Image 1 (tube, rainbow, N blue to C red):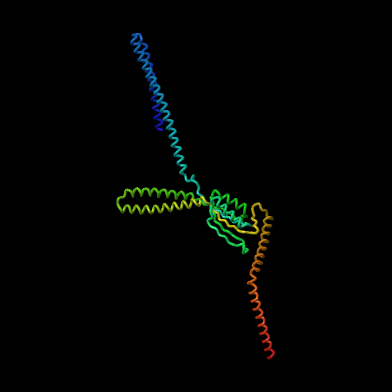
Image 2 (cartoon, rainbow, N blue to C red):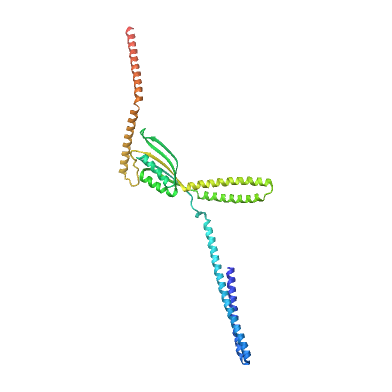
Length: 339
């Protein structure tokens, strides 16, 4: 504001000077016209002087106008500069606002699915994970077809966060989902706090390095070296934690349980009516009982080599005990007869 007032005052002063110069030139012209009868030489001199005055006035007027334009340009530049400064300061405030920082979110998914084609589905999951840039963090498979036991797999997959939708689409289209959930954790504040600590540590490290260059005593060098070692350890620790956070944010975690079935479970939804849900429940119960009887029959048949010897031993013991009881009863009857 002070600079603007100064520009306005200077502009007014230049305008006043221009007006005064114009008035002075008009007075010189009137005085020259009244003295023209004194002689040709005098009139020529006066004419020359009058021309010189007019040229001087014109030059001063043009110079004052150019100065006025320059002062206006300066004022405009000052206003633009001040507006730019205000805009820059406002942008600085907005950019430093933690609310405008990119959110750091860790997503975790849990899915349980059923499939009738275990091998083909497992291969699809592995191939899709590789195609979208993910990887298998852990896997475990139980059961065997040769043993007549349905197989079960438990996988922990790390999938790029922006590609997770492709994996969910595959699960929806190629399997029967019996359970699903998703959770998220916001670590934005922790991440920003770690970055601030890391920046402060690096600044302190630079200061210690500068002091170490100027140190000329051995004990000072040893003390500075000890502090640098501690700071480097803390810097590496924070960097490791930030890399871990980046990995968790960039790659979502999918816990996937795959169960091999001969008949998929009917999962009720909001669109399922009461009678449909009851019918599905009855069908599942009958199917479960049939599977249990089937398993019991398979177990009984497969256990025959063990059951027959055990049954024979039990039968022999029972026959032996029965004969012994008969002998004992006959002996008691004979004793009663003799007595």
